[in-house]
Amino acid sequence: MATSELQIFKAEFFRALAHPVRIQLLELLVKSDRTVQELQESLGLEQPLVSQQLAILRHRGIVTARKEGPMVRYALRDRQIGDLLDAARRIFNNHLISTTGMLRELQRERRRG
Image (tube, rainbow, N blue to C red; front, top):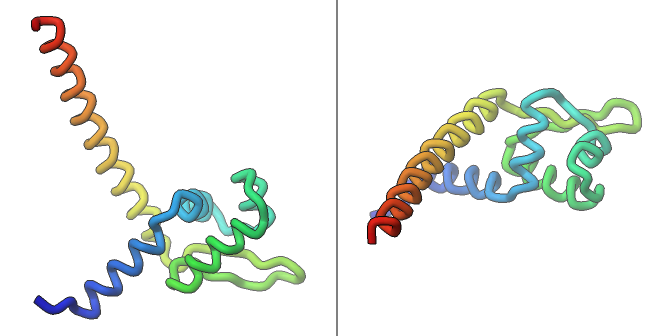
C-alpha cells in the first residue's frame, strides 16, 4: 500500500513534536508569544538548545517568528496546537488511569497468592 502525501505530512508533523524540549516550548507558546530569552529562562536551558528546537518547529511550520527590534518573538502558527496538546494530555491521563488499575489488580493478586 502506497503512502500518501498527507500521511507523510502527518508523520513529519508528529516527528517535529517528538522531543521533550519542543513539547515544553509549545506548552509555553500556547500561553503567550515569547522571545528565545524568555523561553530559555522559563525552561532553564541554554540558548543554543532552545534556538535549535525552535528552528525545527519553524521549519515544520508549527511556530512563526517575527522580529521586534533586536529580539525575535516566537508564536504558534495555529492556536489549535493547544487543543492537540490538551487531547494528548487526556489520552495520556486515560492511559495512566488504566495502568494504575492494572497495578492495583496485580497487587491484589500478589496478596492473595
